[in-house]
Amino acid sequence: MQAHPTQDIMAKRPTKDLRGPKIVAIPPGPKSKAAMARKERFITNGVKVALPIDVTAAQGPFVQDADGNVYIDLGGGIGVQTAGHRPPSVVRAAKDELDRLTHISFMVATYPGYTDLAARMAEICPPGLTKSIFLNSGSEAIENAVKISRAATKRAWLVSFKTAFHGRTLLDISLTGKDKPYREGFGPLVREVILADYAYPYRDPQGLPPAECAKARVEEIERLINQPEVAGRVAAILAEPVQGEGGMIVPPKEFFPALRKLCDAHGIVLVDDEVQAGMGRTGRLWAIENWNTVPDLLVSGKAVGGGLPFGGVTGKPAIMDRPAPGSLGGTFGGNPVVCAAALKAIDVIRKALPKTRKLEALIRKRLEEIFEGHEAVGEVRGIGAMWALEFVKDRRTKEPDAELARAVQMAGLKNGLILLTAGFFNNCIRLLPPINIPLPLMSKALDLLEDSLDLALVGKAS
Ligand SMILES: Cc1ncc(COP(=O)(O)O)c(C=O)c1O
Image 1: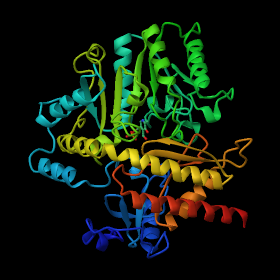
Image 2 (image 1 turned 135 degrees about the vertical axis):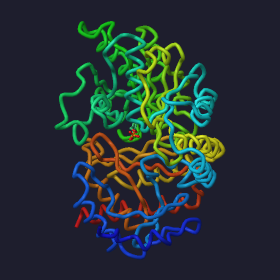
Image 3 (image 1 turned 60 degrees about the vertical axis):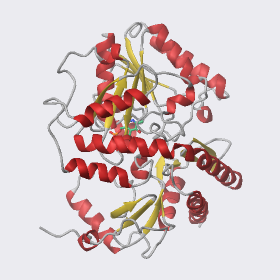
Image 4 (image 1 turned 90 degrees about the horizontal axis):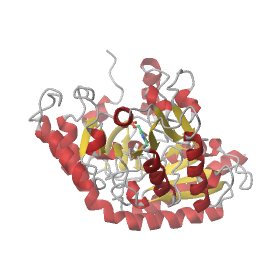
């Protein structure tokens, strides 16, 4: 078996002393290039890697690659590392649990971590949401939320949004509007899905201002669910409280209360997908708290696991208890090591939560300056520690500029930043920094982001 080219680095990777940004070999350096060649050889093309680097270590806001470069991580492994990489108490709790119990399956016997985490979720979730199931990913949790909603209502139809992202399984891609790369070639999909327009004022189909946009989009959903084939047969509306993959779309404050009203009027389960926006990301523990709305089911994931694979559904007992005994579960869901990590991750994030306010103010101010100085930025938007710059070829026509977003991402890498793209048109750069990132470091990162945009624009012009 050919050795991994970065094995020597793996053996002596630094952790606590990681500091950056520091570029010692313009990425991709030789070791990262070799790793990418191995990826091409052994891993399906269906898995695309956004950045051509081979990561060997991470700590706090920093990530190191095999060539010794250190980056400021504004992606957090797709919105997972909300309190930074490897918070010491989370790592310690996971290691301690590894020494006690790695697996028994909650379908075989109870163990303290699962029930402790469920009790904690009952404490911290919106009022009345007191029963949980734990899974291995956000995708699997969405699947379970739909199964539970269907069992509770004995109805088949589902409503979600064109700019939504709910995961990668066949059901989840049926609930996700973007064809490429998520749906194309994988049909037939689940037929009983209505994809509506989210309240996305920047691209509202009628060009309405925020409050009117929220009202019009909910009225449109009401029209759609009253179509003859669907009327009285909608089990659930699934909505992200801030759309992440869609490009950090923050809905107007009127949107969720109106969705809640609609669900109440029609006996529909309101499923709040907090996989990306939840657990501290928006400055509140749950993003839906920003909208003064209590959902029926809350789907959690990503940050809750503190870096380990996690998904959860927490909801009202009258709904959560409807599926028959044995109809929900899975071999690994709520694994003891993950639960131990999650219990600590929740503590760490709750403690860091007050820091989000200053971080938000800093990001908002700098992004607005970048917007003012660059015609290519159509909009900057966000909340808490989830932000996006949406790039356009023309501010008036709002024609998306996906190439520019990609160019900024690659220039950012060379500048020592890990950046992720997003958006229905792939034309956004999104920022998901740890909420406890030191403010001077975030300032530095935003300066580097602006410089990366300037470099990308120069590259485009030449
Ligand atoms: C809002 C939302 N829901 C569900 C998912 C799927 O989660 P996972 O990738 O853990 O399956 C994601 C992942 O990005 C997400 O952002």
